[in-house]
Length: 192
Image: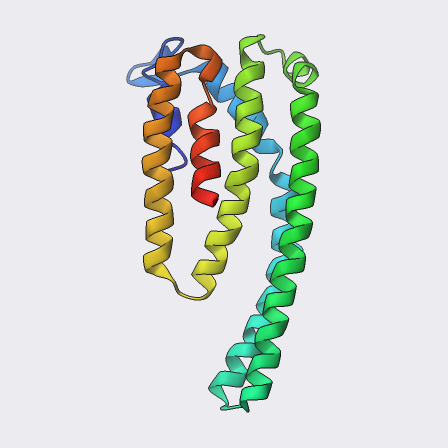
C-alpha cells in the first residue's frame, strides 16, 4: 500500500529509465524521500515513549485478566491504557503537526537545500501532509495489532492500498501539480 504510488509514478510523465527494467521518477521520489524524513521524530517518540509505557500498561491489563483479578482491577488497568493512549496520541499529533507545518512553510528552502527543482515543492508539500497522516495511521494500526485485530488490520491496509492506487491515478491524470495528492488524500481518508 505504501509503495503503489511510487510504482504508478514510474509510468507517469517525468519517469526515467534508470537501467534495464529499472524505472525512476526523480522529482517524485526525491520529494517523497524528503517528506518521509519529517516523520522520523514521531516514530522515535512512538518507539521509545509510547511503546514502553503502553506496553507496560497492556501487560498489566492482560495479566490482570489472566490472573482473574477483580472487575475493578481490570477496569483500572483498562483505564490506564486509555489514558496513556490518549495522552500519547495527543502529543504525537502535536509534534507531527508542528513539524509538518514548518516543513510545508519552509518547502522552497528545503527543496533548494536538497538541490531539487521547483516541481518538487508541490510534491514535497503533499508528501509531508500525507506522511503526517500516514504515521498516525501506522500508530493506529499498531494499536489494532496489540489487540490482535487482524481482520481490521487487513481492512485498513486494503483501504489504504485501494485509495492510494485510485487517487494516485487521479493525481497523475490531473498533471504534475497534483503529483503526491493521491498519497496524501489516501493517507488522510484511511486514517479518518
